[in-house]
Image (tube, rainbow, N blue to C red; front, side, top):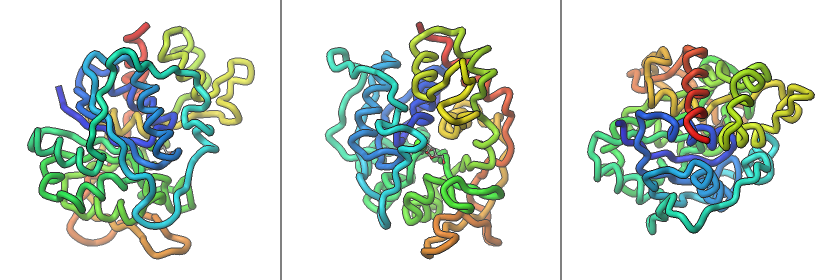
Amino acid sequence: MKRVVIDCDVGVDDAMALILAYGSQELEIKAITGVNGNVPLNQVFENIQKILSLIRPFYPPLIAKGADKPLTGETLYAHSVHGIDGLGGADIPINETERFWETSPLKASELLPTMARQFPKELMLIATGPLTNLALGIQRDFEGMKNFKEIIIMGGAIRTRGNTTPYAEFNIYSDPLAARIVLESGIPITLVPLDVTHQVFLTSDLMEQKIKPLQNLLSNFIIQATGYESLSRKFRNRETIFLHDPLAVGVAIDPTLVRTENLSLEVELQRGEYYGRIKERAADAKINVCLEVDRKRFLELFISSLRKRT
Ligand code: BDR
Ligand code: CA
């Protein structure tokens, strides 16, 4: 079992990432921390509890709130993609009577290095939102954060177009200074950028043939959260739904799903056209960047994680 902590901004695809993490036999989830991102922090924290109520994990993870705003700049929410509540309006009651999580008294920026110290060079950190909590953790206790074995980050658009500006991806654009602090920390990092996450998506064929027939709580959640309708064969007004964050979890479960290259990267902090872009530079290569993915094998892994529950 690989022990992991997940820092997220739930988010429809963050929710699917949590479902994949719990559906795999390979990961043991020690903690889940929330960061301001797709939706405001309090909504993220509520959504973590909703998804845990849906998954009903056998071992309750610690959960903690993190930053409610980026280190610099204004907050940018993604309600147009994830809905007002961040879960596409999916109806999930929070279960407060059973123990599906334990709330940490610590803020994420303290919990992250504390947990890394507890399991030196053993814990993996998977980040699927803006990198504010990680940067604050580094500023607060760099020595502690260095105990993470690896950080897997969904973020960036390296040799492809951005999704928030023509050059920048949402998680990096939302807090470029935090991204720079994390990418330059020297902690081992695997980056899962749009170059690969744009290769993995749900289609109407997958929904009709593989997901709808499962008829369980998880498949029903995916149908609701993505707004999939058989009649139009669309996800609200979209043809496909990208599995950005689930792919970061997929890479933690099975790194052979992707081909990586070691690159030297720099985050653009200058306001203007290129703000939040990650660019390659000619210097010591330090970041392991995913550039190709075995789409079919990843989708099989994702769908198999939905089968395990009723
Ligand atoms: C990233 O942005 C968010 O909207 C998604 O949850 C994902 O983490 C993709 O750019
Ligand atoms: Ca996310």
